[in-house]
Image 1 (tube, rainbow, N blue to C red):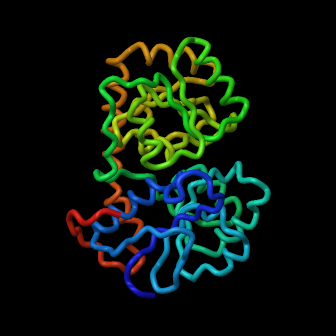
Image 2: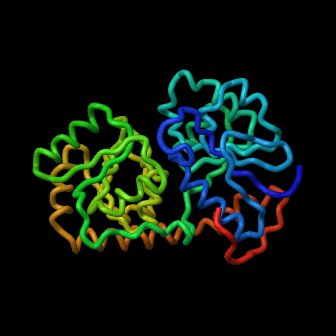
Length: 294
């Protein structure tokens, strides 16, 4: 296998920006970190070659036949919640059994172990290049939410609107298009899709890296890494509306949250994480300094 790593984003539904995905920021962070380690890294879409090692994001969207064609040595970086995988994704577990697996969540790793699948913990990290959203000095959006809307999410968004807040909800907005709304928002709301779940660090990490105040749903069963407990505001589902209204009215509190979140995310150095994760892949990890963009 030739030197270098392809970071492969699998995106099959064709919704939103064709050149962006919910995994785009994670992929870019990996790319910047690997390049700083002197590794030739590129981001590619929906294509796994055989000459370079691949780190695949979104592998749950591969068909069983596509999964069977993955080269040996492929790394699947799982960013899905294993406990809530759709039954039609059963073949994904078979694929995970055959590949090297990275995962961002200790709970996922335990769930995978229960299925006989061994995974390496690779937390979602920060690269300085990802701090790039120019936040508006006079934001026009009180509360921004982005993601699929189901009844439990819709109830909170409607209740916020009824309280007189300017609420914007986006679906299939990724990359720079979504970031324009992030820049103009006072607060971003993170809501679980299901009642129980793992904290959505894949969604929130980019916000923290860009000094954006976040209010996140949390209940006793929500898994969240301890280093992030003071990085944002938390509330149970039935306390989200009051918490959001209070934060929208409190500029100083939002600014303090934004700075705390940024500091915590910056401490998750993606270069150090990739140095550890790739130590056994046969690459020479020597810090290379700033390189061209991914």
